[in-house]
Structure formats: C-alpha cells, structure tokens
Length: 78
Image 1 (cartoon, rainbow, N blue to C red):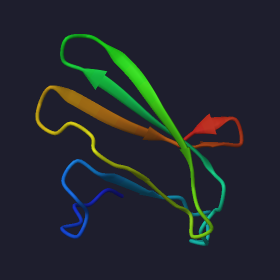
Image 2: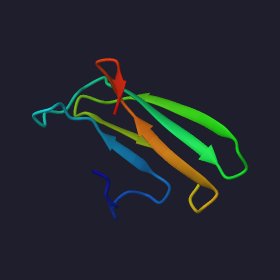
Image 3: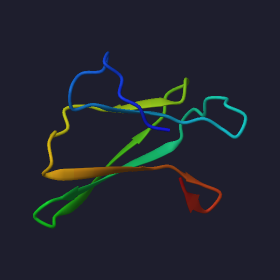
Image 4: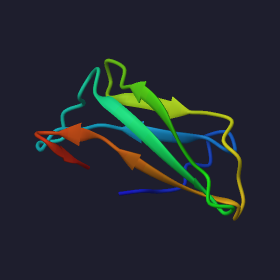
C-alpha cells in the first residue's frame, strides 16, 4: 500500500520490498516508470538494500507526470 511519509523530502519515492510473509527482500530489482503529461515516458532503476528499501530522490512534483513502481517476481510485475 502507498502512503505519504512526512519525513521524506518532497519529490522522493521510497519503496519497501517485502515477501509474502512481510520479510524485507534485499537486492530486489525496482523500476520506476515515469509518464509525462506531454506523452514522454522514461524509467529509472534501482535495487533494494539489505532492509528491502530503495529511494528515488529529487523527482518532479505536480500534475505534469505520473509514477508507477514495478518489482518483478516470478515472471510478473508487482
């Protein structure tokens, strides 16, 4: 589930990757898809740390873009 964390800097998305029982997944592949209002698309990539976390900092805010986080697992994207 997503939530706003007031402790994160504005323009930051932090991803927590957990397995089916809630254990952090280290070194998980993470993709951040960015769709811009003018039709452009791009992706940023990262891997979770030992606690299953990764941050995408300094992202543009506002209504000119939308973000989607994907984590591949077992042939599917979550």
